[in-house]
Image (cartoon, rainbow, N blue to C red; front, side):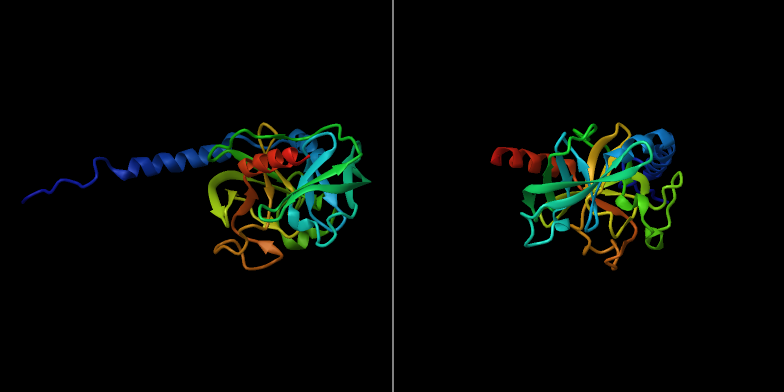
Length: 239
């Protein structure tokens, strides 16, 4: 019997096994501790109309542009800053200094001085652990999601960075953690506590990301740090 050589120079099964083991080990390598949550939750800003944001300098807040309702961009925005020791919120005012609705990004300037602010990640690595800190830390949004992390349900979502996608010309980061209505503008961090994304509506019409305007199933999508860096750079040049 004639034996035909394999068209593949190597067997794909060991590679598939290695890929599976890498995925499992990546998910088990780190567990987010309560201390991580306690530190990161103070890097959250909420908006009166819903959604979240993150301070990126002593006086600037980064958020999603679709949270700023047209035609009211010049009107003072009401924000809630969470303060220690009991995670009570303080009301502050801010104004839009830069907005890009195509990229769904917006910068808010406030006279309030943030004692802590997020550093933008230089890069993200596949299967890197990420955590979403949502503005639902003090609402009854449990009806929209089933997630509980150290009692902060449903404000915390953990997962890994899975993929990069281009949607309508915007670079997105995909992670294996669903998002819910109201997560928009909320920050996504890595284990170094660096900002790796802003939750956005860009891409919600894509297949596989849920058909409801209230709950996004399967995977979460965030604006990639490369897009954020470019937006901040362009905003700085305009000043």
